[in-house]
Image 1 (cartoon, each protein chain N blue to C red):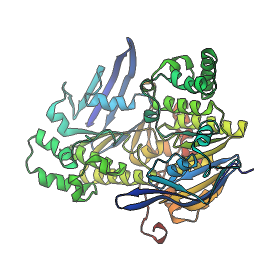
Image 2: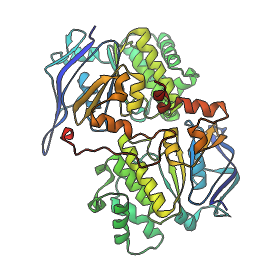
Image 3: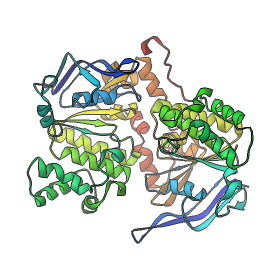
Image 4: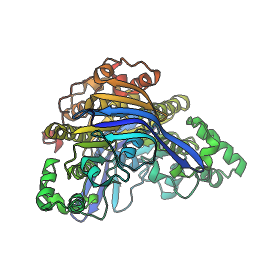
Length: 276
Length: 253
């Protein structure tokens, strides 16, 4: 079943020097599966994720031939319909917990705010739900974390708090924008297995945005490779090592390997025909 | 004689009336021209060791020697002309209201080195940035370009030792490759000694001759590059770190 289908999505920003297209004709569809979007900074992967939630501020513009979520036309939806969708049915985990959590509210206040306002839960119920959410993302000492301010948490903890916050309303689709790039490998593996469990157990759809191609290959079912606002290659994650496109190959080869050669790492050739 | 010697170093902070033992009795030594890696999860104390060497973290026990002589407190100009640090986050480590020119010429002014104009121009070309970047501000540069500026700044006083604190973890994979290549080239050209911190075992393996695995502020195991490549670690923690490396997993597919 298709949860989300996007056809010919374009995101344009008006600048002093004329319009700049950050996303140029991206099409994909997503079922209850894990889709990876990979590319460098500036490739338009984050903008694609935000455009699905219509979170692009003017003067930015979103255009698409079609953008449907679970039968609903996202392009035609009113602002209040979108508000009902955001968080409740489509949630997004932002990249950096340092900038995405409110620095002057404790984690507990932030986690329960939505439950109290939106779901009209009483204080005690909201706290119980929030504690359960923190436990679900493997936080060992949830009471302490609830009382802490974001600056008192490490990057890995902050990232898990954000994931917990997004999962409280049990969304159907989670857009995770570089959810693990601030974490070290061991914590990264934990966060990924949390996300993996949610996709499996709850049948959630996941869009996983990352610049780390190998990580995405390991974790996702399908991968879109983006460059300069276009999808240059779409392939099953298991076929990634057999990728044909020179950009995909470049991204694969520029990572050092344990036990690899110490020759200079190959850079990306940005002058080829496909890069235009 | 090793160039950097750290013996039984301990660092203890007081946070909320409670002692936090960030580093506990860690010893390491790095020879002239060698590249030495520190690896571990966040909070394992690896960055704190670099900060303690620079005098940015309180040393509560042990000794730090550079070139055989114990480092003075405060560190002073002689120290800063021999040891410089490159920080993790190029978005936070450059002054947002200083031009690249003033960022790069400040160490020269402090140390009374003349002809800053020529020095700055050479420093920019050494790290592969065009000369007209001098009059830009950090926000006009990409992350990789900023990290190049931070490396150029660290090299302004031509120090023999660079302390690298996760120099590429804030960068894209393709930009990371460029910065790692730059660091390796500079090390070969200038015979630099690196003490490098990273949580990415593959990066450490690419850059370093020996690596110290750390956990909870303690040294767990020291490995040579060969031992790492052949997975000859003896402790469970070093092995779990090795197994968690993304590269390793993909190889198993």
